[in-house]
Length: 381
Image 1 (spheres, rainbow, N blue to C red):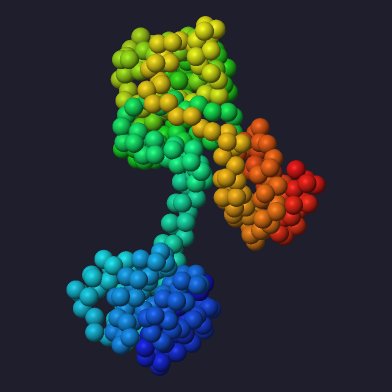
Image 2 (tube, helix red, strand yellow):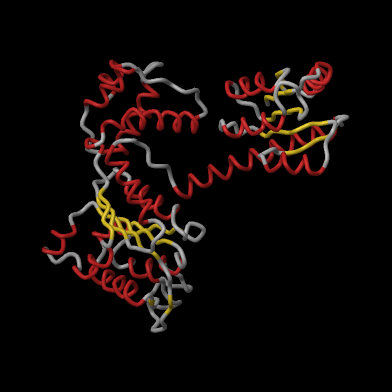
């Protein structure tokens, strides 16, 4: 763990450094605010101790500047002239804690432990959110900016959205982004892959069933619509849903009511439905495979996700993102890609889209050099 001590009094900063180093911490010191800010922007510190009364730059100014610059270290303010108002002001500016001089070793060590535990908890929450909501949309190309603009407008509403695009383009990321930016973000987000559920089970999966309604129904089961009540239901690959299930989904959307399999009792639900498909639903309607009335119900706001070949300008950012993600998961140091390797990847066609690119990046991280070269791309892709 790395700690930075910012204090204009040499005796205090040196003694604090010695004490903390004896406890096993790695410690740097700065004699004034500007020096401390410069060090904190170059190096990642877990905890920063900062004196309030300093001649060159007040500690509260240092704190404000650190927060403005995006430094997220836990900042502990120390002062021999502290009072309640000063402490409250520091906390409002983003300080983790406030300690008065003379410094007490036990108080300092407890503060460091608590700050570390808080940081670990926040990191754990971030990891859990990634597992729940998936990864972010990466890219700055015009098509991606357009999608972000639409999401920003549609998310606060309850309008139903139909997301189209090829496999591997990231349709589910668009759906999650809409939910996360909506007023329903604190409520359930439930995904259903309609193509992965056998047609004879899709109704039970979506609407639930009563005990004994069929052979394997050994207990009552709430369907995905009920599970997503007050939240968002994402119907992925809705083009593969059976016509019988489509009719029931249409009823739920029209009446906001459903009945479980084996029951005639109506259950009221409040669910926002977002659907996605890799099929041309207009053609499926012509073939008689998809209900036109359901199509018009779910396609209030259409969003088309472009293929990777339509947004190759985003490949450098996507590669950087996947490298960081894969190396972090495997506990390895970051591997660079040479500019020539990036250009070689941009020259390729990507029928598998983003999913294929991630697999290729992972393969090159295992088989290629550091940095990954153009020859690595030629040899292993």
